[in-house]
Length: 545
Image 1: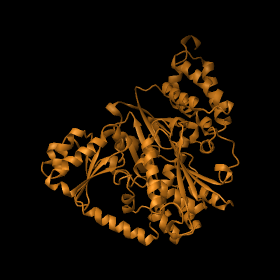
Image 2: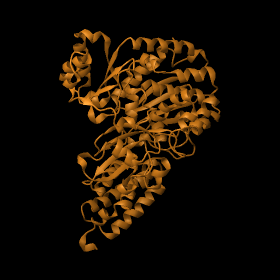
Image 3: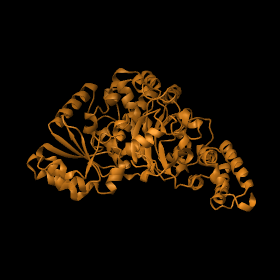
Image 4: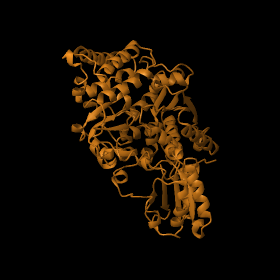
């Protein structure tokens, strides 16, 4: 049991020293993507091959989380613990590559023998990133509490408990300018302050890990790669607002994340980092994982709470807000995975440090899932304010097969499709909103010249229509009618009247739906109508013109 910050720091120092006794760390990515294509077998084979070699005793094969370059997986990263030798990354490794790879790692063969596996590390994909949330991803074993502690894990929590008041913790979060990374963008410090000021015998903290956007995998990667980071952020929130219980709501389709979170909770409780009287103080905090059934609407705060309570995941009207009446009618803080994972480094380095990244209106960094028709798909973390062009062409390497760029969709099914003429737009909450899109949780889907924007809008609209809970008429009926209309454009059977009706219906649904799902469902249609109107006009029957 770790009782004081001094004990934690001593353990951190000892673990770091022990780590230095190993000359090389061979880190095998065990994120979902790499696991699906043989990472476990690669790890096993590397251990067996290195054990047979003379220099094998100085090498340690470890499993680590996702380092972001998903397009090139499975990945094996070789690090010198002394820091004297540069990091080497091997890409698209197969289990049968273990023998020749281990020979190079042990110094028995020349690097040229694995030239086909070598991945260049001095490329914009890596050099243009600023990792705050993902600082441990690819470097620690997600199943190891000791690994997390060796990288200053739980240091921020123990520091806050021993030296800061709850009000001072909130002030640091406010100073950072951190806003909700789930898409809403509401200032995190203000949300926490509202719950802290509400008088109640019981309060709750909820982490929203119900990531349902097509093409999005940011939260999944964070939960899989650094589960203790999420727990530490939740505990800091609990201390700041006066809550002693937290729930992590994770979609059941993320079994690896669920397993690692549950293991992290057990380990943290066993070592006194969660549970009763943490760090020898009167503060207690318990955490529990709750599984979602896959309903997209349960990403909405009130629907998510209804699901945790055992009810159907339907949204409800606000007010009352969660700060007054949340989980089981008690004051509740609800933030997403990335928001909570941002808090420990903010507490370690100070709010002003974090506010030094980003723009005036959008502080800090943002994690994006870059996917679609782009060369380097994967997970990236960049300062707010980077342009779409830099994200797609510099970090992402440009459009796949060197085709012409057509559009990029940000913000998931509720986001908008942005044309080439706006690629120099800085990525920030306010700028994306001004051009008809949203930040969302961080999904970025690139489309090339072969994409039909009517079909793209139809795809996202169908998703929203299917995922509607059906509680309010505008969303339940309106999205279905919109889908029928847009299908007519896709089949070249539309009329001029259909175009007018489609635009009117978009505005009506946007203004009258109960929750964010319905309110933002028309966004892909509105943005494609705005920037690719000619494709809709091409879908109007000739005789109707």
